[in-house]
Every structure is written in structure tokens, then in C-alpha cells.
Length: 110
Image (cartoon, rainbow, N blue to C red):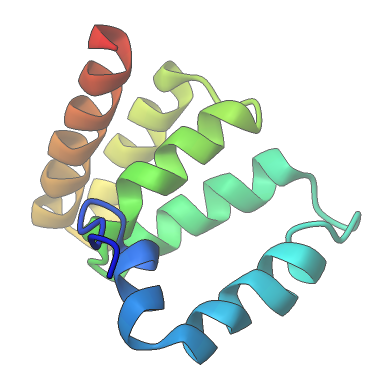
């Protein structure tokens, strides 16, 4: 039995709920994320905002990195988190800031 990667919520979920993980892969990533009606950059910004507003911080690191890959800058993400403080609450924004700092600090030290 291979070890479970608990640093990735999706990897941990796959171990216990493989069918749920399959739904994330198909249709979410294979169809929804590739739909041309919204740019990947915009989808990332929307997803990050929703994760922050709904207090799903454990999913943030992967989506923050994906946001960077999809064309967002750290400055834009910082501004979005600050903006969300007024709509999603300061605790949610502060938590998101801490996760972002940790995610991007890890990337820079690698």
C-alpha cells in the first residue's frame, strides 16, 4: 500500500473516495476548466475567491499555485485577498494570507 500524501487534499481524498476524485478529474478539470467561455486565469481567480469566502483554506495552496500558472501574479493575489477581507471577513483573508505566504515561500525555497 502506497503512502498517502496528506499535503494534497485531493490526493488524500482519492485514497478514501476514489469516485469523488474521479468527478474532480472528469468533468471538472477535463470539461469545466477547459471551457473557453472563461480564461483559466479568471477561473483561478474565481476559485480562489470562493475558497477564501467559504473558508476552505486547505485547498488554497494548490489553487494559488495553479493561479500563478494560469497568469495571476502574487501582487494580484495579494490584492484579491485584501479585497476579500471586506466581503468574506478579515479572519478568512488573514488565513488566506498565511496559506499564500507559506505556499509561495515553499516555492521560492525549492
